[in-house]
Length: 437
Ligand SMILES: [Zn+2]
Image 1 (tube, rainbow, N blue to C red):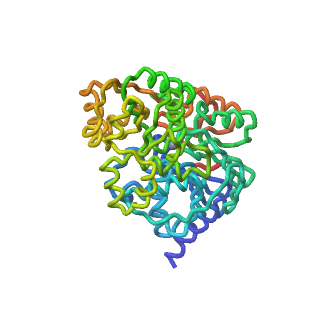
Image 2 (cartoon, helix red, strand yellow):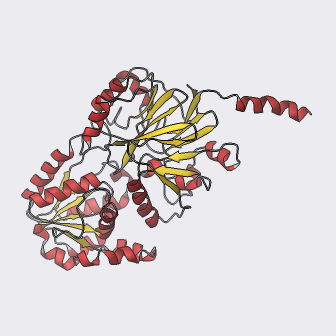
Image 3 (cartoon, protein in one colour):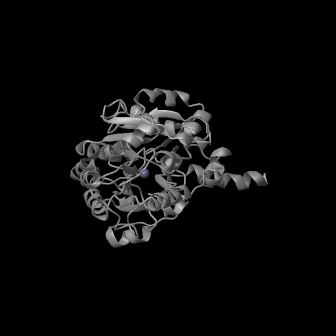
């Protein structure tokens, strides 16, 4: 009896939730590991469910689950209708495999391809996701929520922001975006035809200490690449992400302009091949491209039973001894793991190494530092050429001005407090804080 009395008000309280509420489980004050819960009446959705950027892959993913959310999902205290993923960067989707079985996970089809290949080569095996695919600008319904995905310009292929409506309120979640690269017109279009929203969760990776990060266009970058390749008498080595498709296109175009051959590894060839249905991208079968087989990478794929990938690109393959012969006519994508083959086969005379990634990776990766010091010792010229995957301040301002939201919530930023210096109606929240709208 006494027990009933104490329980009753609690039950009444949990049912009395009216209107909309949200909780940023992670990402209110950090870049990476984003996860937002949105509730309206009996419907609950999650926007992204990422791994923190500083996560260590040898750790158990359980360690990184945002709490108390996952405990509540596990013990049935909370149920979610779906998780909706903005793009295929691990800091936005990396923990989706830890969701309870049966929870639908919505994403773009090309993002699913990228997540699948990353999953295939990860040592950590998680349960397969119950995927549902959305299409850009095609509204879909999850419980009480109407969701419209907006294709965004970002360093991940197939990245989206979401316009979400329920109970007369509209909210926009930007995911990661920028307005300065090959899909820049997407931001222009949104600024000219802004959805009217009450709440805007806006990424602010470059707000604060990273304000001065390079935000040149991929076209400018292509010109820079072409000019460096032209000036280089030997091989041009390039380190970038094999999943940064815009960058691969930039490198390919600069290679063609300078009349060289582009050498990619079989993993990059596989990614381009899988994305073939979604965009016109350079492919390993093209005459100007050849595929190399770095030994450690190939062994890793064999060990994982991914022989089919190895075999698929053999017909476009090039031997390391042949690469050595054509060094002065080649641009080659390399990663830290290729050092073994580079040492063994390449002369590197008159070579240039272009590093085209966030420079912060040097601090995090010892193999990358080893690669750098080897190339330095060999007298290879070093060039840093990059442009950020994230929006510069000016573009963030454009978006806020156009949408004129009642509330701007910083997310995916290490400096949310700085938002108040640049945007009106900023509401600072903490991870785990319940915000009623
Ligand atoms: Zn991203």
